[in-house]
Length: 126
Image (tube, rainbow, N blue to C red):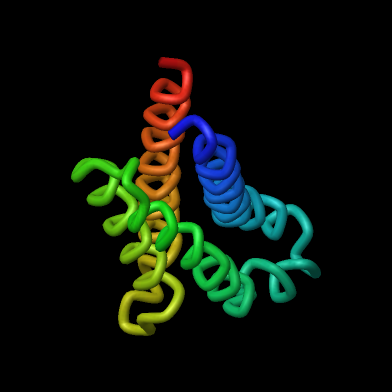
């Protein structure tokens, strides 16, 4: 188990970082675009960027879900978070709620990976 811990921790670390970048994009860029209107069209409505974050998160979510270190709570957080991210990025009828879905999804996803990371870390210390 201890030999798998560094790989699992790295996977969760990258996943948490991706969720954080997504959260920063969703919260900070609208503020910047309000102060720099010429940048608004370029980054705030960059649908390709949202979709890229979701697609990049998929492999990390799958690895976390299929590992032996994922409890039901962790799996529920990761699946719920990923579904919300996917709905926000790809489901056009919910476009008006994209930021809320993405923020909530990113927080849930990062929470699931964070709990998994803590569990892997604690088990490797035992």
